[in-house]
Each structure stands twice: as structure tokens, then as C-alpha cells.
Image (cartoon, rainbow, N blue to C red):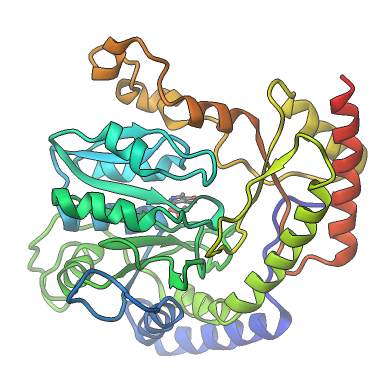
Length: 395
Ligand SMILES: Cc1ncc(COP(=O)(O)O)c(C=O)c1O
């Protein structure tokens, strides 16, 4: 069984193919009606109570070429150049790289073991007088119940809270959807995501100013689409119409996909409850995640590589990619930003940096979850995990 499966039912494929033919016939290949429809539908799917900052209304969506572009554009709109951007250590490369490309400096923060997310304590510990933004990543599609507190910490200090919602299409906390907790949020439509269009991203914001600037940035910084008059250092961050129609059709499946993913997760919860020491990341009360990832934590000292290998070789079950196996401050490319790098303030304290992120990155696993997973497949994974876990416990 594959770690991920991209699900486009036949009816969707036919609709996308027919619409793509029509797009090609008309020649309206970019920034056209399907991009606008996808934006409106995505905003509609993520509107809820209390959307955005006080005084702002419903979500506004801007489609872009990738989730990475969405984050960089948001950080450029906020203006982080020459300033610090707090990001969790356990996120994808793109979260920190977007901060760097927007001219900021990534500051890596630790996470809360209960949510795999930043917490008020870890953010407060990472704040500097130069902090311009905090990027909250909804790892695995789970929104931390502390998002509101994080928002308040940021608001009190005039700092922007940005959501990296690349994993979190359709997730919510207390009925409030992903994309509505911060100043702006970036989503990804990379193929492995719950909803995909091949390559693409979406910005959600309740801010009229950010929406306007994001539209300028995504199209080469042009102040006016019809003229070569460049007012921002934008880039070729547009979404094609073919991608937009793919996303538009796929988005209709969001509720159905999340429902199935949650059923799979509920079954995994039941089975893992019988395995002493293998701890699933449980949803805190009020969270309704999309289960982009089903995360479980192995006991200390367990050999994750061996666990993965046995599942694959003996039982043909491939685990999904971790989120993430190497924390970003241990990635060669970000070495200079590691808290224990020479010259960093916490290097002087001599404390081990970001212990929770280091620990959890090293020993969690992600069970396969597909949007159309069958009961037999779920049983196959459960049986394999139980059997391999049993041998692991006896090593
Ligand atoms: C947490 C996170 N942030 C950002 C991105 C970047 O998205 P994309 O691959 O669409 O650029 C990804 C996705 O792959 C991600 O998982």
C-alpha cells in the first residue's frame, strides 16, 4: 500500500478534462474566470464565525502558484525585511525559506508535545525586539486550541500572526476554520495535500490591504494588470487556469474527503489504544482536523527506521512522510539560524535547543491515510502496525 494516494474520481477527471479543453479553446490560460471561481469557492469553504481581525469581514482569497509563494507573498505584504520571523522547528523547509526570501530572518521555536504546534510559552521564549511575524503551522491539519492566545500575544506586541495552513484545508477549532486565526494564511495544493490542483497555493485573509497587495505581488508586482508598471518586487506567482479548474472541482470533495479521513483516524485511535506505549496525537477538545496526517509517537529509543522497513518489507505498508523527521535548525541550509549556532543568544546559555521538537521529530510516525481508504486497507495497516510493534517491543 502506498503512503499517499491522489484521489480524483472519474466524474471529476471528466469534468476537468472537458473544462481544460474549453480553456485551451478560448486561450484564457491565466488569471481568468476559473481562478476567480476557485478563489471564491475556497474562501466560501473557509468562512466561519469571527473571521479575521476585528473590523474585517469575510475571508478574501488570492490564488497563487504554490504554498511557498503564498507564504512569501504574505510575509512581503506584512513587511518582514530585516526583521525576525518566528517559525516552529518542526515544519517544512518552505516555511522558513519563505521568511528568508521575503528578507526576514527565521527564528526557530520549540513546540508543544500535545499539538506539534507553537505554544504561548515557546513563542514568548523566541520573541526578540525585532520580531515582525509568527508563523503558526497547523501540523497534520490539527489547529492548536492555543491559536487564540497566540493571536493575542502577537496583537499585544504589534506582531503579525500568519498561518501556514498548507496541511489544514477544512480543519477547524471551536467551529472556526483554518485561515481565520491570523492576519493571513497560506494553503498548498501540492499533490499530497487533502485538496490538490497539481501545483498551487491560496492566500486567505480578511484584510483588504493584504488582498490588494497579494494580487500585485503574484503578477510581477504590477500595479495594474494591463500595464508594465511595477510597484512591488513581485514575481511570476500566478496560478494557471488549468490548475484553477482542477482545484475548483477537487474542492467540492473536501467535506467528503475529511469525513473519510476522520473515520480512518477513529479506527486507528481504537486500535492504537491497545498498544502500550504507542501514543497517537489525540485531537484536543474542540479541534476538528482534516487528518492530513495521522501522527503517532513511538516509545523513547525505538528504532523508527527499522519499524518503517519492517512494515514495508513484511506487510507491504508504507508509512507516510514524517512532519518532520529533521527539525529545521538541524538542516544544513539553516545552520546559521540554529539556536546553538555561534553568535545566537541561546548558544551562550548552553541549554540544548528546542528539546521537544528534536525529540518528536526523531520518534513519530505517520500512518497512511487516503481520502478513499477502504475498510480492508485500514485493517491491513492496523494488523501490520500491531505485529511490527509487538516485535519492536521485544527487541
Ligand atoms: C507546512 C508546509 N508549508 C509550506 C509548504 C509549501 O507548499 P508548496 O509545496 O505548495 O510550495 C508545504 C508543502 O509542501 C508544507 O507542508
